[in-house]
View 1: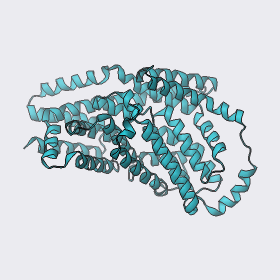
View 2: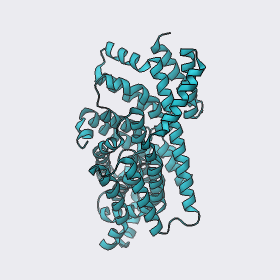
View 3: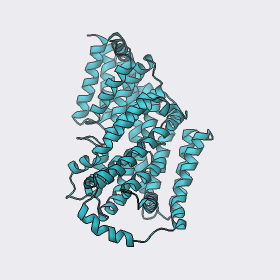
View 4: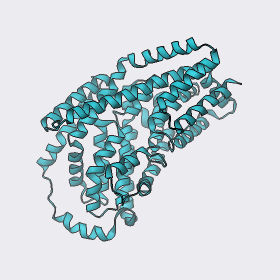
Length: 442
């Protein structure tokens, strides 16, 4: 059996195990261990490589970014900062067509700059934005789809956990990846806004329940409007956190790890000032931070071991040689790679896709001359689309479970988020064709 065939069997076995319900970390470790054992016929070598992967996998200082940014995001979520941001966006955009949809995207864009976790954004804005939109005459499917669609901004606008995972696996600067995601992230938000306004203008039946909208418009015009002082008071905490974290990163004043620590401390002060940590909430935040962080770190250890196995097998080099001999070139490889990632997005979660594909694709992308920062932005954008595609669509299921309304089906939320998938594919095409969109600030 050739290296390429053996690698194909191992990757196929990994996907089968994951589809059978085996935890991704266990599947990665099991396939990595079996692959090295079978290739070298030496169980001790497999044990030594696993030990090295486990130690080196979490010994790096950069790994402290994971629990720190997770903690910051959870503290911000528990402090009702997301609701305040939405209230301000609603007040500013209430006269725009599709204004509440635009407000949801705008609030999610700002919220993404301090969370980095799409699921957190989806959960927060499902509780905040969906009831408000439905009360003002929007279709429930559109409202839920808008929350699910705009929640993916949390994975592109820095800080982003997916960029941290990719940076670790690809051995790229996490700070540079964060900065590279700024323009594509805001482009995504702008495209979402333009799409909502166009839909509300030219296809209002897709956005509004027209009968309920007429009834709701009278209540809305009579509703209280926030004053400038009230809007400023609601925005101060999140603006300070964004300036603190992104300003420090962009200016070079902080490393990503230091930015995570300072951001978490700032979010803690915000939560304290709002008295949001009582009744056991602080313990729940710390427990959830530990749970999420440990899960990610175990996955990274497993992915490091899996990557070593692929290197021992020579799989990346064999695939690179095949791509070059087939005359596909960089463009052909990129098209195939994006297609595979989009396909996997229908059956796997975002972290699993990164853990499986990055060790295989990065060496090939390097051989073909890709800038790995640009390649990382393309990868995260493609992976994000998987958060909205059936049958897995974790953001859609998060909205469904948080909404907890039997009258709103999963299928209707998928339908409501479909326009956002199209918008993301458009931005993905632009970023792939014009690398400067991701590299201009780096």
